[in-house]
Length: 480
Image (cartoon, rainbow, N blue to C red):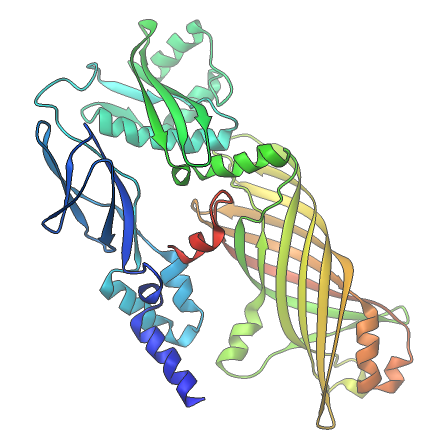
């Protein structure tokens, strides 16, 4: 036992994110306009754009981009905290987590560098494009509003890079005006509407775009710069994006393959913080149960940890609209608790340890808006329940698989592209014969009664991490 504890201490003293494969380093894509520039990292030339460059993770990582004709530029790579790998990874053993977090921060492995890195070099004073003063990003034409909004945010960054001296209207601020004039992901207004739209936005140019093709490895976007004075674009260009930059593309790619109403693959890992109320129905009488927890640290942890699960969740719309939605979704969960039945005198002091594992697929009906997603779902599941009971120094274990259903009413809201919160009320039914078999050892008198139904009610809050189904979810969760 002492050697195991020592091993755990060594791991967490070294930091969870630091020890994992490629934890200290990260490979990023570096591209430049014009291409063919040398990439210098820590004083050494490590590639020629476009290039794959391996760098050490950190908050302050710099690259020098050198081109013989277009000049030299030093760029600091943007970074974000690795919530999935560093924070959640070290959280597994709770008490040792602060040590892991501290080590990861010190060594720099707790940071995820933004990828790809695109650099625009000066072109010896040559004009980079048409001169204008105020630019708005029009909704890109695509398969749906979610893909449109993600591509628009990427195009906004592209516009800032291409036209650094132009006042750019943020896409989120201008979207409502575009929608009022019938400009959305699947429609463009007539020319007369467009001229009025220019006037209302007080912009002299639009950056319009369209997702023209997409494969598993890249997404092609065709863009054009237009003004209110002419329908002919003043400038056009193409942008190639990685699927990682537009997660909605990968998800919709699966949707198109499998059907619009069917979501076959989970996209969110959840931790349910909920209280449970078990109940037995014996001879048509509902007998409430009570969850019981050990004293101390671990008892406090499992007092509020209702379940771990996988589910499919969709982000709320950025549009001020209300949409009804019907779809079939997957779910999977595992939960464990200790249960007592204080209202049954003969077993009032007995304790039953219960493990429950379920996976299923079923219908969900919801109402989605920019304020979140309210839903109700009834999911048929294949479940396995196991009950452990100790009596007279002997330990009895009973397990049984069956088909049942999980009913849930809830509300979800995405706080960011990756993190989501959910309030829910859940009802889980269980095979009553398993408890009857358990009572044969606990109380033969109770076992002679008719066990009609066993159920568990959960009310609580769920915290989730959302990943794109177009990529390997395990790699996304661990942040590699």
